[in-house]
Image 1 (tube, rainbow, N blue to C red):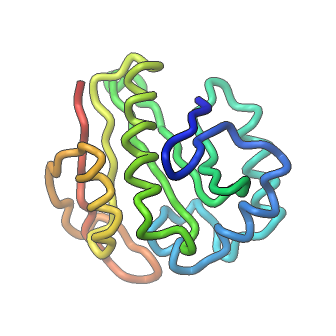
Image 2: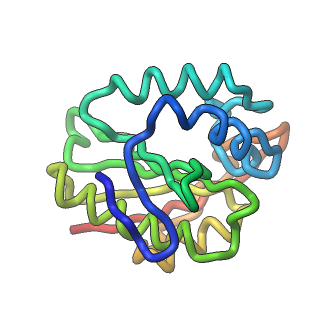
Length: 170
């Protein structure tokens, strides 16, 4: 996927994204909305390790969000397997300097369309922490439907949280 949207470009990651990736990912507010597999602090070494693994992976399932030539966020999909082979889960993040501009809504909508067009999927879902209403709003504006609240589902930064489950189906 390489697509120029109105507010950003979604494209494959490159090794030369490491510095920009580390700069925008190394933010506690960004980390608080993400799974613990996303390191904090986020170093250039973390960026290089992620990029090396991601660039080599086939099929390509993780993409860079670029604004003004800089890597400022990411979007990716985790494809289901076995009895869930027609499903996938989408995840995304954006550097704090770019919040509130409609970039992520535009990205998630286009990326979900890409997933339906390029993978044999009937459902794309996403879970957000209940204390992150902005991320839930991204999903709603990108055409996802709220399916339910998963009570006491995650622990983030020592706090027990509910998750909100959203999905788009084909």
